[in-house]
Length: 158
Image 1 (tube, rainbow, N blue to C red):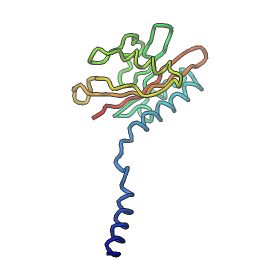
Image 2: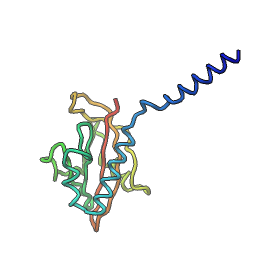
Image 3: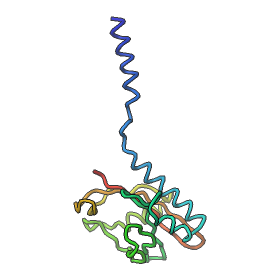
Image 4: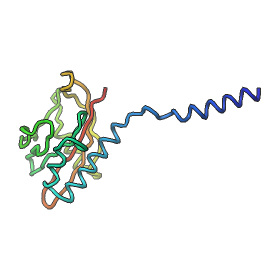
């Protein structure tokens, strides 16, 4: 019986090292990217944008950091790495594939007491497979001089 208990304890100890492995690292990765980009923007303002746009740390195949500029009621997309032609577009009324206001969701987070946090789930067409999928975004508000920015990065929940 003692041998059996000893073997069970050893197995439990060995298996405990496996707990947590394979956990989804995307939330931590995405929030860290947003926070790092936010620090750059707080220090450099728009001079940080080229580094955020280029492939590498802030723009990979599976995610990217975006930046919106808030001027009163007008909200403009100013950094959008996957399609630079969309920079400068008005996103004041940006909606998901279910007609839910993504803009309102993001601005509410940015204007919260903390000034950052996770969005609720919303639906967007994933360009990788052209299917509508659930998505979440980490948002952070940054003020550089007199300009307010909303910085975010996301991932699809699959």
